Length: 73
Image (cartoon, rainbow, N blue to C red; front, top):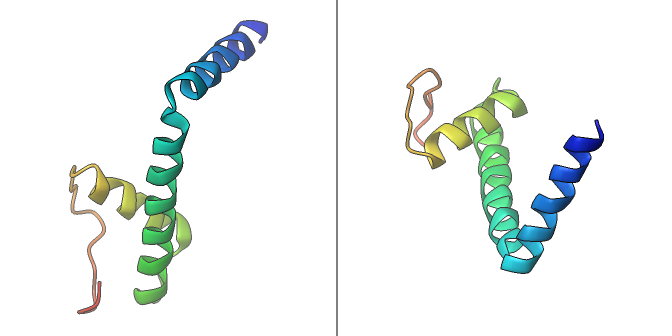
């Protein structure tokens, strides 16, 4: 367990030194708010399903397992 914490601390330190934490924050916010909007527009869609859709769409994988049902989606 100590090895995992050590690796996490080193990784976080690297992110802070390289200013990558801002990039991760921006990516997280885009995916989070995109999934909130998708869950709001697509009635009956849960937040976790919407987050899955946002990640798959943002990474351009496009599995096709979740597709929009409305014109807005």
